[in-house]
Image (cartoon, rainbow, N blue to C red; front, top):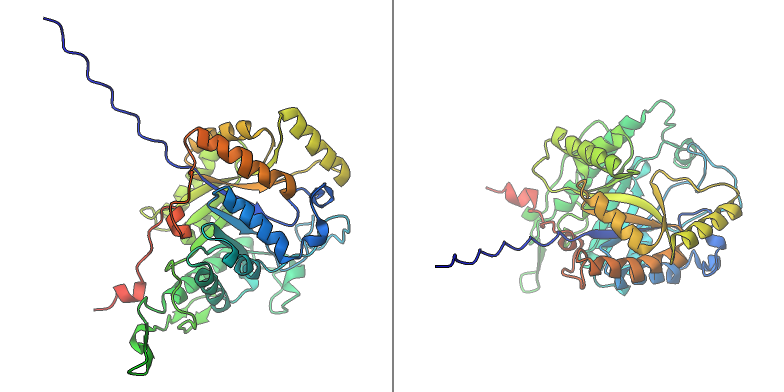
Length: 401
């Protein structure tokens, strides 16, 4: 009697989807990007420029785009202006730009950068809540700090001379806590809009936040109803110990800047430890790797283009993040290798937006789709939905007897 045929091996579970974002800044992240063919520097301060970038990113099914911002002119010097005139200087406000392009898109997340050091949390809370309403649930926030004295002089309220960077990150964590409380200060059903009774809001469902800390004292409530997402996604770029502590206390998503797979494992470990130290180890946290990318049909062509850009700039391009010059297929392999370290996604910085953003959306994305690790259609209409994050309960409604 013959032996029964062996049972078929269970199918391997499908690979977790890879998340992908792009960081938009000027004409691109290389200082000479504005001088490249197709860069159209005369349009950098127009709504049409930003709308075209975001619609291209959405056509590539990316999770979100980020908008860089600062409160001083861009500079090659970390502590002040460099007075250079051969690089892009000046920018539009990131939150307002995101709000302008929101009605032109349907699915992609919109994540402006905001400097918490000189921005009042009450102002930020209503600006981001407004962006979330305008985009119908696609707003996020990249919170950042700044220790540059020239930026501080724009406001005249602090000198920053004796304030350590860790203290600025601690202040930013309080800033985010106030913002989050203000987002919750309206319960979801606080708006009644009952014409017959003349009641527009239920005053019992508007809550003072009564936050008092080392850096802020805020009464509340907000003047803006709770955002559609409940809490827009908060993200932090972690480059030092203080930033990791801010990430651990405040972020739904962190950006890390390793230069190889071993560095990615170490950075993921540090981020997870920061989350544990903040008592949030059971909360979901996305970790994205950062790379500046120069993509072309061959590694040699990408290297030649980077050398040409460097020649126009007068110096080799350097970055806090890994600089990748190669093919979309080569980049796909690198992303999947680094993902094994615990990263759930990547935020790519296109070296030249006119060239490298389409290379991401039209070449890298199809390559990742071919490998079965990237979506073929948007599966959600909110940024939290795209990232697989639940809509959080309102803290004040949850505390109601």
